[in-house]
Image 1 (tube, rainbow, N blue to C red):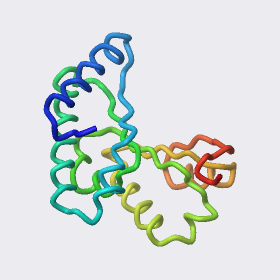
Image 2: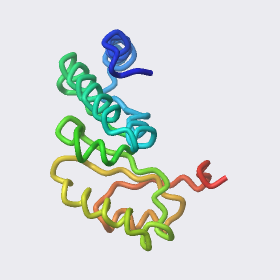
Image 3: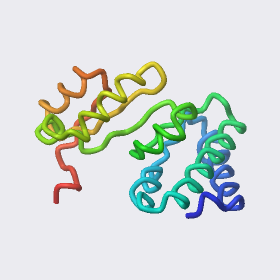
Image 4: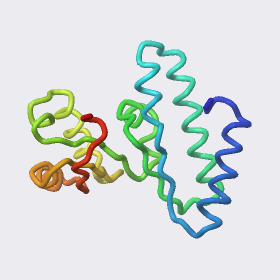
Length: 152
């Protein structure tokens, strides 16, 4: 997938028209947006190129239907630097209180997303009721998935 390729973005937009709008679905889940952060963290020029292309994709999707909800999976730095004003929500997978409560990186992002709660909704996937409550207490929208594939 090369978001910088206009033809590729056109294919994605056409799929949104057919598979989302055409079926009366009201939003798009942008599942691999986090790859921009994960794979290009040490290549700022390439990362910048993909972030710009990602925003172009978001704009192109919105130009087709401005009422679509856009939910981004991970890619927290990309949200902060690029996509915050173009999306409606973010999914934080593997939101485990046992890890997050002690982790500075996670605490920093929790503060950030709480500060941005007037712009985007933070959805979380939690492994248990303790983590679910921690998510809710912090203003996030949790769901439970006790069979998290990331821990296997």
